[in-house]
Image (cartoon, rainbow over all chains, first blue to last red):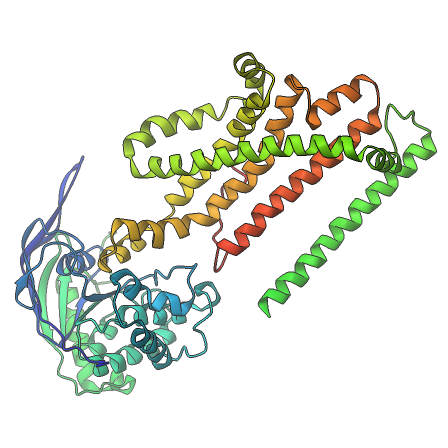
Length: 270
Length: 265
């Protein structure tokens, strides 16, 4: 079975999202457009509540946009686009299924054949992320990092052309997180799918991505689109390089400028 | 190896419980003998054992009668309770109407309905069955509703992005997530069903363990009353453990997140 399915392009055109409550309506996302090339790794960075996840969910059809269009591979989508791998902040593993049964959940739901080949792929994926021998454990017996690896395997099982990740490593400790970043890059280089990655870690966004999209809040708006010109394959070592530091500083300055980060010591109470 | 650990721990924990139980029985026996209590006031454990041994045919027949009422009542509780709970979860109108009333109606002491049920349904099987059903029905419904609602928004999102049909959402996500809670309700329900059947028999019956108890209590044959109590206790414990055993067969994976509403009833 071919492991690498080519990535698909994904585009949001002037999407906005308005939530209406009894108190009135809030604009979560305002007139945002984003084009992600096939096979590209793009991160969205921004403060909490800036609509990153909203944008991500709109771009895969999980959430209907109040206005605007979403195109995948040039075709407009209506409703959830299911040929996609989605990784949540929490692993969302089903506690009553073993690691292996969790990974093969997508083919059970989608009734894909031949089962044996997908079972083999599930085993290969688990081996790739270092979970060989854990197939028959239940999620409750694994650590947070291991569980998140299982959920990534589940997302990759059907070789989806698109991989959407919503702060996937946010709940992990710093060291596990760095390791997961490298593992993810390794997986991506083998799969060549399009990745849209939401995070609030500037470091993480820079080390992983081809492009970093910067959002500010209230309403969620894309304010900058920065191309990251670091060579691939990326290593953790690059985090010490001048180029890396320059990118991180540049992004931090943008947040500073928009008032998301503040350096002044004599600022009033917020 | 994990299973062995759990098993060993279980044996160790139970050893203390059994030890205490034996100690209490010995103390009881000694107290009765030493204080020379009259038999009608408190019979010794050995006297109760003898009584059971001497009356096996009578007790066996009436145990079967009561067990039959309990099992039918419990089965009805499950067959009506679980589907109703599922409907309540899927139909918002039902939750606002039926479920709210059910939760309030749970405050009614169900056993107090027994005399009315006798008036309506006579002296046969029906009133006992209905009391057993009513009393186990509530915890089953409430726990099933809580379990069915315990599915997280992320799980629903996962189901949607995988393209799960609503049938698949139910069988692959909602139901398995709910099972620990449902079994919590069934375990409470089955022991309550025993209470219901006995109360039904107290009010009006011509057979069953509750009836036997009433007759022999009237004759001041306290040892016989205790014999029935022992049998009823054993029945409750066995039924509870049968349900618990089925639970271990059906519920897979970690049981850490077992519902916290086990004691809600």
